[in-house]
Length: 119
Image 1: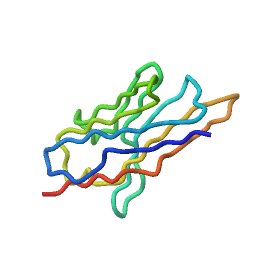
Image 2: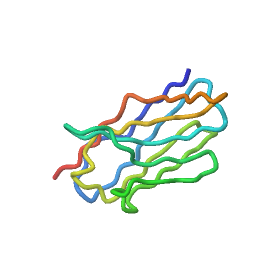
Image 3: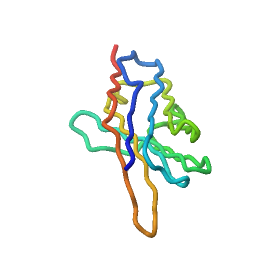
Image 4: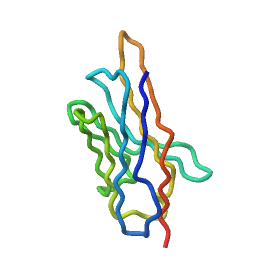
């Protein structure tokens, strides 16, 4: 089993920054992808960014170069650096870890961390 614990959320003003962390524990295959999703009030969960074990990244269009996803496999931790935050970024941010083993996909989620951007 894999456990994911997010941290780093909080209340910030527009234009400020936050760095989210996602600490993973348990039995984790070497080859896995880590991602961040978010769910705003009265909205569906949406993709934010992912990073593969080879360091390939992909971002949602709304990130617009403001966010950077990274990972430290030695520490079993993924990060999401969020700069120039906007009120529209207010959401619960969830960490996701995904891997495939013998043609079966395994998908794990953290409990989320609240990010509120307000003046």
